Image 1 (spheres, chains in turn blue, purple):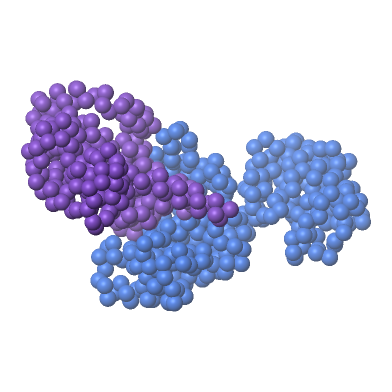
Image 2: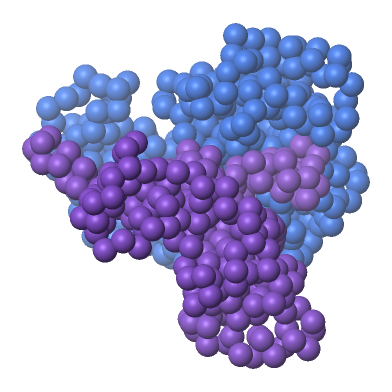
Length: 351
Length: 287
């Protein structure tokens, strides 16, 4: 069990692009941290710097209290799972799994035992003699995991390992990964752009954008108490609704273009933005905000109604029974428990 | 449709192999039959003396004669073939090895001005090689490299290096970096990863590159003729040098030697055929 500390970590590529912009992050021993963000936000670069595959241009990295900033990948004792598995195609599954042990010169008898053990845990025993290309994506991914696990590294680093799997396989693997990680308590840093994966897996979600950490908190907190508009919009599907407007009086908020007023506990600002998740927008006959349903998305367990109102497009999440509402005139009501307030200028959450 | 396809193929195959067939037929003729006014190409057992005949009596004398030193030459055919084999093989191995290392560097490391360097490498092929034959000859004289195997090995290696670097760069670019990265994380040094991961994956590319380099070194004539007229003479230069000798051109021997000269290339190409088919389409296959 090893903790990982990133201190002022930066990466500027030779072309001038600043991929990671001085981030600080402390990962506790045994913690499962997910780096979440859109493509190009610097999450993969951060992970690769922890692995030693990229050298930082600023800041430092330590693993288990040992400064590793300038060390090569093999001196860091990490296990890395690649997005496209990176299984050696000219080796069998067993040889692939045994490879990290072979590299460090483990005795053949112990090597075989460890391979058998990890293969059994991952359900790979029947596949040991196959070549990677004979396997399905999910099986290849399990082999890649086995290869990372066989050595019991200080830290697991995973770069969108489930990115190429289909939905059902992905959920299954998510559960499996979480189980394994909980059972062995190995510190894990996991990169994904899939917020659902992040929510399922993480002890702590680190939301990144433009090379910076926007918020690092437990999944529920990121969802419920987003630090700013970007996080609020990126996490959750569909994302949060935003309604800009002004404060009139001490505790009244008036949406731009809207003839309604909403009770708000926001101090010392005039312009602000109301953020509200679709599940806190309700259809109600006595609702204050009238609108027309322009689209009706079936999400399975619920429906997302896209409603055009005087305050702009608002998405409401309703029960799956509420079908056939497209084109209908409805009235919307906002649940005060779901209201979050953001600064109109920089998007930061208002206290 | 099927008929058309087959007829086109058959006609093309005939056109392409006719010179080889003719060479094969010539190699089993007597010298008289090769220079007769009437083309004699039908092997037959009984001799006829009709001047208008198209038949000839096959003989393997020409192959046996390859071991003799023909007038106008200093050694027998086998000694020149040995030169060709040594020079071709060494320069091919050297170009492919150097080209692979160089291409790996360009592919994986941030080389300052990489594009300019690569363009420079390519630009060495813009000029017809024979344009520099005189400077090279003078240089080689100074260095005492004329008439040596080393001289031609060096020259062919350098000429083929640009092709080798460009071809190999294409192949290595296609190999995902993740393989080496995984190996490095698992405990390999970069060199280990290169030898144990990249080289096996680049084998196809190396085979294709080797075929191109070998063919070009094997068939090279201009430099071989100019630089090595006195020693370490290769087969193309040897045959050309037989022209105008006192006994005339030994056509059956030339044909027999030509067949043997083509054979290694054909054998090598067949050997790496499996790689070639995949390699020729490089860049178009998804990982």
